[in-house]
Image (tube, rainbow, N blue to C red; front, side, top):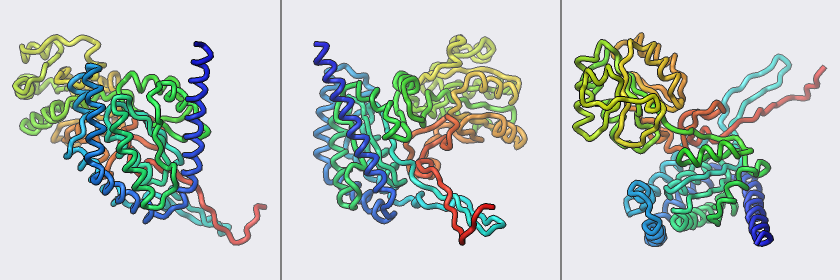
Amino acid sequence: MAAEQQNEEQDVAGLMHQIGRTARQAGQELALTSSEARTAALRATADELRKRRDAIKAANARDLEEGRDKGLSRAMMDRLTLDDDRIEGMAAGVETVADLNDPVGRELNAWEQPNGLRIARVAVPLGVIGVIYESRPNVTADAAALALKAGNACILRGGSESFHSSRAILTALENGMEAGGLPRGCVQMVPTRDRAAVGEMLKMSEHIDVIVPRGGRSLIERITRESHIPLFKHLEGICHTYVDSAADADKAVALVHNAKLRRTGICGATETLLVARSRKDDLLPAILDDLHAAGCEIRGTREVMQAWPGAHEATEADWDTEYLDAILSVKVVDGVDEAMAHIRRHSSSHTEAVVTEDAWTADRFLAGVDSAIVMHNASTQFADGGEFGMGAEIGISTGRMHARGPVGVDQLTIYKYVVRGSGQVRP
């Protein structure tokens, strides 16, 4: 048995490194393709997704049947499900990416030295992007489209729950790439559900330039712990909305409702509400009445419980919890400085918002809160590349590499310096 296990591990390692070598070669070829070729390939991919709709739904039905047998939760089953509308959404999303301006070859800066050297900083593809994600099969199309638009090869490792669906979507991608004349191997998917493939992928720094994890905390913690490759990632979305003393009441009620309840299971959902003490008796009850009527559980400090008796007492752990559910932690603060201090202690550096009509307070919050996304008088649920006009995103990054916040096509490039001379030699 030990020998068989060793052989299986060697087989997975060999498979993964072959995928990596193919991706690296394809990425080098892809960097030389024209913008027109990549756009044509993406448009062809959108057409293929529509043509292959029935095959994709049939594959998805297999995944859903297996998911029911495994006892997946209702939320997981919803994320896994593909219907006509969702497949059309995938196709339309690929077309949106195709229509974006080409990020490759942009001149980011240029200058001339006194000796006549002309120097330009020019955007180039990152190279090979590895994407590791869980149950959402639409990530297969979204991630591949973004990577290709930016001239990158990609290696996709989808969740075992969406194995058949993702393979069917991959066929549409491969057909689209072939129609556009792009190199074979520029989009590949790990063809095994073996978890050892993820561990091997995270060690392939010679083949992969950046890893993008998409999934729950346990997946991202594992990838953060094991990866030998830089990551674009966020661990969780503990997002805050601060309602200031100068907040407009109607605006505040609507914004908090949307920020918490529009979709509770996304990383941009507000998990903690901070309210200025001067609005404890008028605005705080109005906000909480509205949330409670919509089925939201309120967990607050004793001061919140006094102002709104329906609240449960919050524990210290609540301030560090990403609920992904209709639950909200609430605290009363003296003002913007105490709100920022709370955010510094408990934020995951994803998205924070201030609701106020006072320009000084807004500017202080936007400058003083060091999260990837900061907002004024807007719902935290706008924390999304599509909503930012980026077409789509491959993920949200809260790190301090060159990509922070929504990671779209521009962030999937790096740069190099192009120097043009006329025979200069250095003295």
